[in-house]
Length: 576
Image (cartoon, rainbow, N blue to C red; front, top):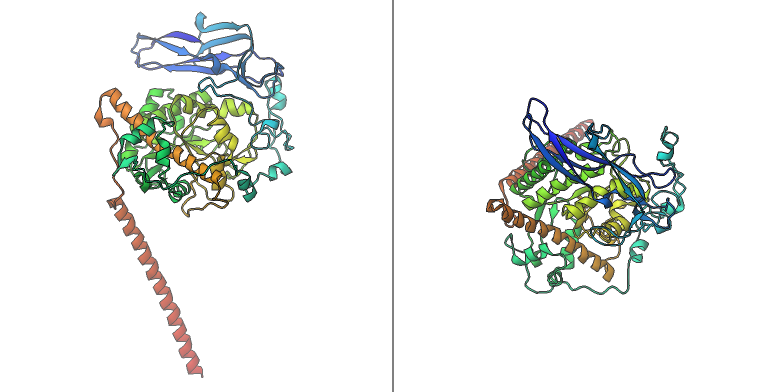
């Protein structure tokens, strides 16, 4: 559905405006839940002088208006994305409430028959229930229907009657929820498939992705194509120790892989400024993500991502723990400043452009927090249970991430602290494999968030669920369960490939971007193997100073103790 709108500046000073196109889908009470009005597309004008006009074009793909019917609520024998027959009303608005007063601002189109989407419209992969009832891959239904959650979900058919009025008391865990509370050795052993073949490690094939920090031709070829047949020969060169070290010790960067020439690399933290979270590095402090979203300006977001990516490289970083695109479920959420909006489309467009800008600079992003990390205020974020319908999950929370993967070439994601239903998101097979890879075709890497509770945010679980990197934290970590099976080693090899693809792919996008604008200055610079720079020297001096100070204090305390002991001995001798 395409609409062209002429915008005229009728004021006496220059300015920009945002044109918003909304749609209202046919709704039958008691059937598929739908919003009464939904943002379908938007466009920002250029700066218009007084009296100047501009025509903008807004397009809503018909498939984007499909609702996800997890329960066959319209009784047509189908579960999945579908369009109900009936009138679809499109309105050009200034915001979600105010329709423009032009007579042509409202358009009604009739869909004569139901349309069903059994496959993903981008990848062509099958789409089906994966979180609901007996189809729940992780073992417990996301809506709580098989674990005595007794949740009353809001419905448009009875909004007043189903709107929550009091806090829900804590519920006791049922046996099926308890069984998934923590990952166990039996679960790891259950992952073993005797049909899995052994992998080759430590081969001497002479293949390198970097040569003294410079990306090789092979590195560019592999970064351009996840399915390049040369991947196997390269991965055969990796040792088990290299793959495990890169997987486990992923906090702050990616490990050196001598066998393939990869140097040790660093990742920066901070949602809107390089060095803004850790203080390691210096960069421009940009406004919060929420402020950026209020500009409705994808081009501006892309420029911000490109600038932050460039500054990351200038500070020695090749990756960025950002941006983040969870939902503003409540104004009191403790992480709202990192997130864009309460609207999935606006979040996806602004975040996607930020990612695309960083890609242009040659920096990979770990977009976070996958998924539903939307309530970090007033509750302990680790292991909190989140329950919802599969429709809400897909249409609201997953949609920005789906846009990032399918439309904006994101190659890195970060999982979250919470559970999705009964299972930790970073160890959810349905999320990391069933949705992300099997439906959306994601080839990149998924890193965990910072894991300070290894029994809960378990590295064994994350790897086997489809994760790529485990942020085991300052203290490091180790695999807790079996590591000898072919199934484990295949998972480790798969994770290494996903990580290296992410690492190399953004170099391809950077090269292509520089060529497209005809500016070699936009090419990312090569990184040499790490040497002791001035920042490292200053940090080392600080550490030595702290150590010497601690030793001095220890010496003083020891001297005082010795003095008191000698004094006591003299007194004892005198009394004797």
